[in-house]
Length: 87
Image: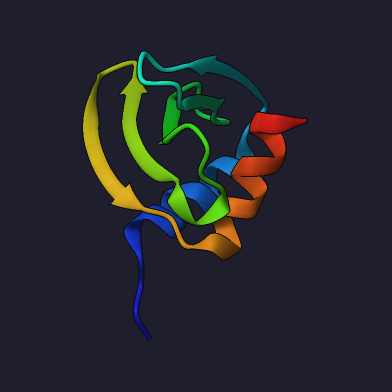
């Protein structure tokens, strides 16, 4: 079974997240921040006019530091991010 890191990060954010925020990027895209149950914040981004298949998992901000990712998210998990970011 192939594990896609972007999907794993998305699943964690969508299933344990307590709240979220959306901001535009400088290039016209969207940046979605989801606060996890641990208090950490997982970020996702997608370009401007794109959709569910174009999300990437980016930065994870934590109390003890953070990580930078650039991991693609499949359209199946991207639909959940798209719903939060555009509704």
